[in-house]
Image (cartoon, rainbow, N blue to C red):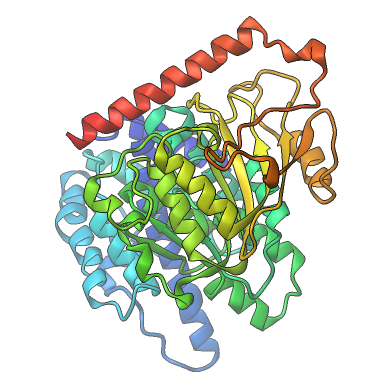
Amino acid sequence: MFEQTFKNIDDLLYKDAGADSELDYIGQTSWVMFLKYLDELEQDKADEAELKDEYYQYILDPEYRWPIWAMPKGADGKLDHHIAMTGPDLIQFVDQKLFPYLAGFKLTADNPQTIEYKIGEIFSELKNKIQSGYILRDILDYADELPFRSSTDKHELSELYETKIKNMGNAGRNGGQYYTPRPLIRAMINVVDPKIGEKVYDGAAGSCGFLCEAYEYMYDRMEKTTDNLQTLQERTFYGKEKKNLAYVIGIMNMILHGIEAPNIIHTNTLGENIRDIQEKNRYHVILANPPFGGKERKEVQQNFDIKTGETAFLFLQHFIKTLKTGGRAAIVIKNTFLSNTDNASVALRQYLLESCNLHTVLDMPGGTFLGAGVKTVVLFFEKGETTKNIWYYQLDPGRNMGKTNPLNDKDLAEFIKLQETKPETEQSWNVKVATIDEKTYDLIVKNPNIPKEAALRSPKDLLAEMESLDDETNAILQSIKELI
């Protein structure tokens, strides 16, 4: 039923003149779903208060609650068409009254960690793009069918929402920044193994895929006590996101996974001076896939000790600085980070090796990230000890990756198992840091165990890498154009 409801809403958005793409579809679906979720949350809290013979203070004033403006119903439980707004009246109410009212919560909320503040942020950053009040009326009718109260319902909705995020990523370069393949995220989480009581952070949160998967991982493995559940809800997951739409999608994704008021801050992470980061701002576990190909302005670069315009390299400095001593991190980054010869890349590799134990490098195959040809590696490191030995694992699923053959959990099962003992195999090897050239700190992926007959690359592989480099170059040029 839920899947058909989502499809019906997408079909309606396709007919509307204001929604142009998958990005718009999920953004518009998100604000409608959020208000439906908020109404059910308020109803649950009001019911709980009534059982305790207590008074519940609603967050929203009466005229802005879902049953009043969106779905006024008659005694028969069906929409009362005599009083329900539709057509131009509905759009006028949403644009001129509802959104400004909800955006105002950002100014009146007690602090950023409240659901009131999240309401204000979402509706001050997102705009209603639905132009037809008749189409919006039909969308509200469908959204009203979505139940958020049971964990089973939320689980199904979260899976469907994840599918929408994935489709948005497949839609093109702009959407791809929001989606990291979930099998890769789960493998990264398996290796860092976050535990209850630890704080988990993603400073480039996007759609909050890392935090949602970490929640599932920790929830499944922890003792279900009241204290643990409260800790998991309120004091475990933290994130920052710069872009408006990604922020809203991330908040909605976490809510659907069961986190009522996510600790996600809408800010440019790289705008923070890393010299100002204190112990209270640090985390036990960091999981992230910072955007690659971006270029940062000079004033942003001043916040970092190693100056570079490469967004991902600035994020890596931020993550190292933000990790607690003894903390663990798994970061996706372009494979060129390992071997670039520019001063910033060399200095950053040296900084990583000397301040952390970079114990594992996972080399991902081309095509891992749909819609982006960039080759990536995952860096696994712990802060506080220098690196003595690096274990490399070259993932080879035995097929060309793509939309019809995406990464799956089985592909990564051997890596997760072998990572515990770090043996030498045809796909894995160890490198002693003492043997690395201290002038270049070159960490390039170069498998010494590959059979000689397999050492020569096929023309298909060479063409794939050329396409990957072309995509990377185009992404950088696009970023430069956006800055001009």
